[in-house]
Image (cartoon, rainbow, N blue to C red; front, side, top):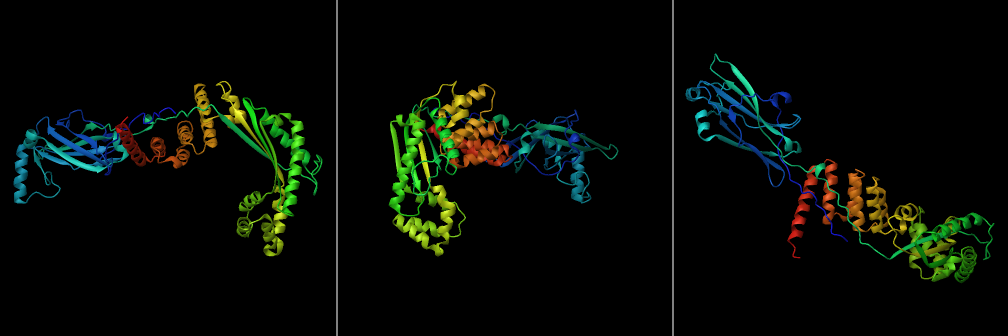
Length: 488
């Protein structure tokens, strides 16, 4: 098997915040004044390593001095691209030199009322000019924050006669990479190539025989139709391209009523009759290296399976009798004695007829098929294809612009316990079927395989569960790092 090329694209993960409403509309917030007088160049956002928290650093220093009597409020707000989500940060108040002294004096005298400009914490522009101001905030990360921007609204007050001015500027535009559709990678694994293949098929033939007789009567009951079905089965299988018949097994079964030895002998004679009839119709059967006929006799295993799948009220008692009484004679006697024979009569009428059957089992050796033969064999007898051949056929479909999902689905059906078949089918469901729920169901049986982590992450992300997707990606990245550290 070729080495798996997964984790084609590693994920760089993410950034940003969420919470309070904006101070104005999205359109207003996202506009800028064009007269920026503050330097925000050292402001930035960063997502913590755990992925659950966004750290916002708001840094500000004056580019043009405030007038002596001026006071300015800066309201930083982190906003989503569409303006629907936002997080408001703590506002900052900066005052000109003379106004700053006035505010301090009024605070000492206690004549600055709550709500008046400068009533809260105020910083001097002189302080900011010398060292700037950096404020850090941490908020729970939400996905919209990855492409957000920090917008700063400024409201400034002059002296009483100067009025109020407002403006807005964008401090920075975040660009925190997120796992998304651009990062989806679908890793299809090439299965191991096999040269020896075997194809098997079987048919339960319900040809009926008159009571106690073993001669074949084609017009008796529904024998004509049943023999036609048997011939169709044989014709279809004996004409499969690229196959060689290796083994034929014909087994006759009887229903379990009456004498055991008699039933076994009668089943053997009927099986031989049917064998001679069908081999005269299809001489190729007798040319198989192995050709066997067997009268199995009473089919207790078939009865057990039929009762297990039934709705019989006392099926557990019947199953106990079949499983715990030693001989076939004891089985039958115990069932006859159950509830005064009522259960036995139901079995005799509704269950026993289907047990009187002859099973034809054929086994073939199958050669490898050429690329040109694959589409035809897939349409007629996909069971003759190996998983490797189905993989090659899927690639052929892709090269022709056809959807390969049906091929990967069939491979999974034929090899349901094969990890490669499961992984390939899951990736096909994601890439060609856009079916994340189906992919997750398929991957459930191999979820502990490291190769399943990335497609599971893709599926979760498709469903909108980006947090679970990121957890899976972290695990995938950790597994990849561990594998790279292993000695060669």
